[in-house]
Image (cartoon, rainbow, N blue to C red):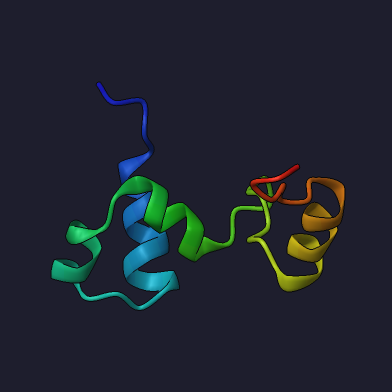
Length: 64
Protein backbone atom coordinates (compact mmCIF):
# COMPACT_ATOMS: atom_id res chain seq x y z
CA UNK A 1 0.00 0.00 0.00
CA UNK A 2 1.11 3.56 -0.65
CA UNK A 3 0.15 4.92 2.76
CA UNK A 4 -1.92 7.66 1.14
CA UNK A 5 -5.55 8.22 2.08
CA UNK A 6 -6.86 7.90 -1.49
CA UNK A 7 -10.56 8.12 -0.55
CA UNK A 8 -9.84 11.28 1.45
CA UNK A 9 -7.68 12.76 -1.30
CA UNK A 10 -10.32 11.96 -3.92
CA UNK A 11 -13.03 13.56 -1.77
CA UNK A 12 -10.88 16.66 -1.26
CA UNK A 13 -9.91 16.93 -4.92
CA UNK A 14 -13.18 16.06 -6.59
CA UNK A 15 -15.65 17.51 -4.10
CA UNK A 16 -13.62 20.09 -2.21
CA UNK A 17 -11.67 21.56 -5.11
CA UNK A 18 -14.19 20.65 -7.79
CA UNK A 19 -11.60 18.99 -10.01
CA UNK A 20 -12.71 16.83 -12.91
CA UNK A 21 -11.59 13.20 -12.48
CA UNK A 22 -9.11 13.38 -15.37
CA UNK A 23 -7.54 16.50 -13.88
CA UNK A 24 -7.38 14.89 -10.42
CA UNK A 25 -5.60 11.78 -11.71
CA UNK A 26 -3.02 13.83 -13.63
CA UNK A 27 -1.88 15.55 -10.41
CA UNK A 28 0.93 14.25 -8.27
CA UNK A 29 0.16 13.87 -4.56
CA UNK A 30 2.50 16.82 -3.89
CA UNK A 31 0.56 19.03 -6.33
CA UNK A 32 -2.72 18.05 -4.70
CA UNK A 33 -1.39 18.84 -1.23
CA UNK A 34 -0.22 22.22 -2.49
CA UNK A 35 -3.63 22.96 -3.99
CA UNK A 36 -5.32 21.99 -0.73
CA UNK A 37 -3.17 24.50 1.16
CA UNK A 38 -1.31 22.13 3.47
CA UNK A 39 -0.74 24.12 6.68
CA UNK A 40 2.65 22.45 7.14
CA UNK A 41 3.90 23.47 3.70
CA UNK A 42 6.63 26.06 3.32
CA UNK A 43 5.43 29.40 1.98
CA UNK A 44 6.65 30.27 -1.51
CA UNK A 45 9.58 32.65 -1.82
CA UNK A 46 8.38 36.25 -2.09
CA UNK A 47 10.27 39.40 -3.07
CA UNK A 48 10.86 40.54 0.52
CA UNK A 49 12.43 37.19 1.45
CA UNK A 50 14.54 37.20 -1.73
CA UNK A 51 15.84 40.68 -0.87
CA UNK A 52 16.63 39.51 2.66
CA UNK A 53 18.58 36.53 1.33
CA UNK A 54 20.43 38.72 -1.18
CA UNK A 55 21.57 41.01 1.64
CA UNK A 56 22.66 38.06 3.77
CA UNK A 57 24.44 36.26 0.90
CA UNK A 58 25.56 38.89 -1.64
CA UNK A 59 27.00 37.81 -4.96
CA UNK A 60 30.77 38.22 -5.20
CA UNK A 61 32.21 39.85 -8.27
CA UNK A 62 35.11 38.20 -10.14
CA UNK A 63 37.66 40.53 -8.52
CA UNK A 64 36.44 39.84 -4.98
